[in-house]
Image 1 (spheres, rainbow, N blue to C red):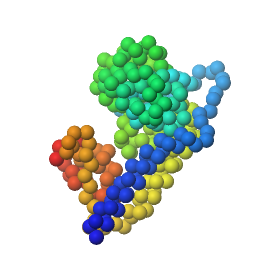
Image 2: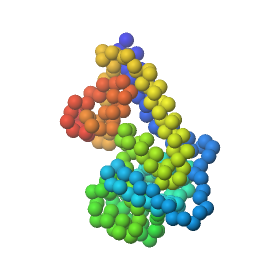
Image 3: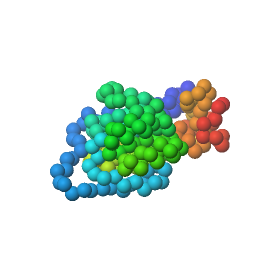
Image 4: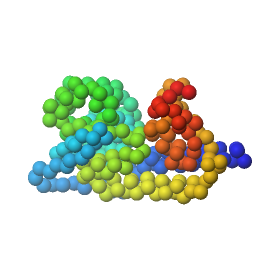
Length: 242
């Protein structure tokens, strides 16, 4: 019985993770961003993952992506051709490998190269927020900067919706969001009514050996949403070493 419960937990977690990963491959479906031919200057204002209100002038034709998760979302939205440069961790899909590298990570961008390329938009994760010098230089050059955390499962649909508005491909963004929600509902239906005694304990390892996810982390929410019990869930440290 314990073996069956463990197998079920693994399957449920796999479904939850696959729901997000599969959305990336939806880029092969029909459709794409609509083109606007007017000369009128348009803009859109969004609130990014750090709580900053950012105004972006449209259309956005040149993007530098400093986060692999954001890069994958751009390709899912069929806007990968707008990427002019990337960070070294952005290596999927293979098409992005042809783009030049301008950062080892969001925290450590090559500001000089970025300014030379004159992007319309820089997309990064929230590590750039901790390098205020680099962030300030990019923004002072008149380049819009949006910082997001695609590992935050409670935020990812908002990120997709915001990118849809910014890139003027809202239909594709809504298609991906609907796809994700379809699998979220499927998982919830399958785990509904499972008693606490029927839930399996789960361990997820992060970057370092024995480093896991605890309360308040993205990994903890994934386990919880999939109907499991995180063995590190009660530790008051988002990334404890067990």
